[in-house]
Length: 92
Image 1 (cartoon, one colour):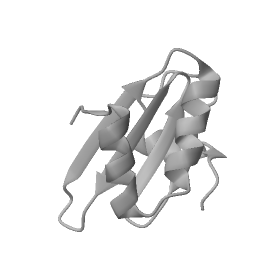
Image 2 (cartoon, rainbow, N blue to C red; image 1 turned 90 degrees about the vertical axis):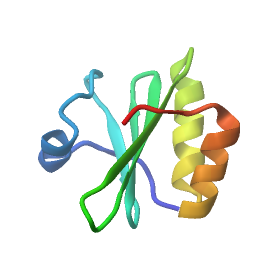
Image 3 (cartoon, helix red, strand yellow; image 1 turned 60 degrees about the horizontal axis):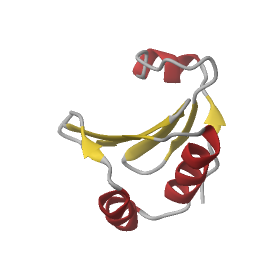
Image 4 (cartoon, rainbow, N blue to C red; image 1 turned 120 degrees about the horizontal axis):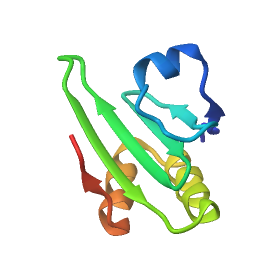
């Protein structure tokens, strides 16, 4: 498991579209999980500079936090499965 951490300057440089004052991020092998207020975003990156972004909005911050914590505790294959069954949508 990788804990969600507050954004540092390099995270702001990579994900400048975050709208909350204190977004959090968990960097894993080839993807990042971002908790941004009421939304959770998962960005998959491959060696060929391809990016695959999925997101879901929640009605409360505790709900979003639970999903962020759940996703950061999974391995890559399980992350996609959890996202599929949780209603994430592809945004990029």
